[in-house]
Length: 570
Image (cartoon, rainbow, N blue to C red; front, side, top):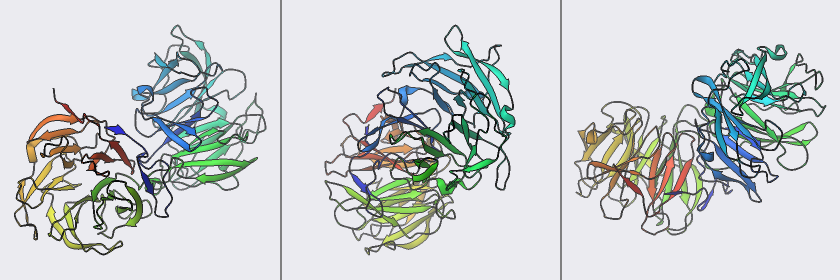
């Protein structure tokens, strides 16, 4: 399978095309802006998942994903590119297990960077390991303008530990000297209830253009950004003044723990900001979709929010699960997506549908909004004709044990699906039921499979008929396998032999296992994200099904099918 971000047109409910429809969504993006390849244009790095770093580069049409695993570097829980000696080549600091700091030296060139580990555990001049709280993101800058790089480590008590660089060791890793554990007498305590201190990060740059370095602070217990204005000089910084909500002309408010990154995004000579919302003490659910801001400095010290969706793709919240069927009977496949919880209604999950307004060979999807279903968390849809009327009906799993059945009435709009049974089956044990409809015994009616949180799959045989289903539990542990927690079962014919394989998505992600004729004999040749929820569909009328994957970020990833789809087990 080959990952593709924009394989066809997808529009939102207003008819506006997504620039990056199948990017996959974000829940807690950590951005940094820099020119990594020396071409004179800012690049954007984003960390969404532990250990993984995505690189976006800008063209005339906007941001494009260059790689989702930058040089396969493991960055742990945080990263920071830093030009240590001003030669235009960026080195890399990152989290190493147990809050150590790993240093990658750039042994490439300005236009072709290449990184090697020079220090697995960064140490100070006395040989003592330097620790950085892993939930925080370190920052590097010459805070006192003496020509020496400073390392600023935010602590969970709201203080900043300052180190100053003193040359390189024999492996050309930087050495830092501890200057103070309470830099500038700074201690940040949240300005809103609960007024506490916690995880934090910062950006350091001259915000007010007065010739000295200021600090822009994001904190778990702060819904916005705080400007720590340098009231001293470049050589003698003084941060004893008020903490100013930022931007001063219109402070942003999110769910908290905002990670700022600065750079000139539009070439006007003024610093702009990209702000990732990691989610703090103020209901992270509400920013599970709107969490990567572009804030431009439109005039000196006047800041304007351009968008809370800088990388514009399908993002419906968190833990998305896709399903395909021709729900409106027009001959092409439509898309239904369930989510864990709604950003604008935290009392329920959501079920969204995209109508295919194209054709069976040229897809074109438009978001039509919500489908009306029972208010539950973790909506997990599956589609199939259960009553023999030629229209696919809907079954919906949820966080608790019940699976609801909805009849496809054939009418248009949100009320297309009408509740028939709020518990057509129940999970025999566990939670987070994810259904799949498939005729496993070849008797002409659809049977039901149900993945759960523990990784088990329950099998319910349809002992009714094509017009009146009646599901009987046959096994609460189908095949006796544990592919991984949060099992998402999907039946699909991967090799065109008319025999469906069972593919299982899991919380862990990675290459999903494939079961053929009740035996695991392969894995799908694709690396899936966490909380992977696969769905398969032939949208181009070729007879070959492509792979769509819901995930923790709340969006969908698309993988185009290639010749070799499965990897035999060893």
